[in-house]
View (cartoon, rainbow, N blue to C red):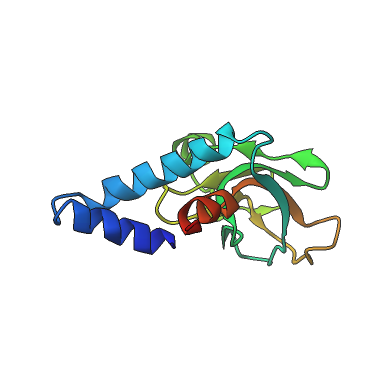
Length: 146
């Protein structure tokens, strides 16, 4: 079952009484927790190709949440929007080599780099971003067994 099918099933069981946003948050929290309980954890690494002038990217297909990210061998700092705003009010417009990232709320599955990448890089280059994430493979395995 896909995430959308599971969320629809939960709404059907709740007879339309459940809040969609709350259900989505609980779904993500449950999948993340299941990923942490598996030994070894269901984590995988991936590469982001950066595009000059583009700060926000969708998660890789199998990713549930981003654990960490590296650029040119340095770990990027995970920040909240509030921290970025307090650090630099113009953070949404600054450009350069990424030094930090933030993830969006649980319903949109995207990652935003700060500052906005100022150059384009292929996924295989040393200037690409390496990320580690919990994998959706666990949720697929749990939900498709007969």
